[in-house]
Amino acid sequence: MVEVEAKDRFGAVAVQDVRLIVAANATNIPIVREFNCNSTEATGGLPTAGGSPCAVRGTGLGSTATDFRVWGTRTVRGTEQRVDFESCVVVVANTEFRCTSPEGFGSGFQVGVWAQGQNALLGSEMTFFYESPKVLSVS
Image (cartoon, rainbow, N blue to C red; front, side, top):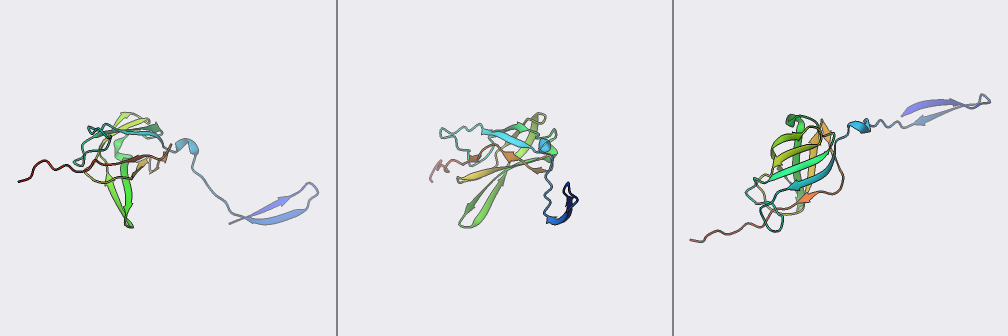
């Protein structure tokens, strides 16, 4: 709380405690507009083995991969599960990165992005899912 003193044009004084909220410069907030993975599966799901290239496009994403991360989280029976994307590289500075999907399984993963030292804003709800595991042989 900050104490603010104000005077009107007649000289009357009023003092009021005010809650001060400081926001970051909005021009520096990374914003993700698109998250798109190249799936080899017909349904668009990611293979459980991982390895699919995924593009993240937006603004203010930075120019180095050292301060850029992508992950997916979901909650199953009250427990949060997280998978971290790998090998992120800059495609176009500040606007596009490409990462590789990790191994995983399940559906309903919410995308999260860290860029320029802060969580990025997502232009819309971005989710992904993994294909169901396939039995390749029985012996």
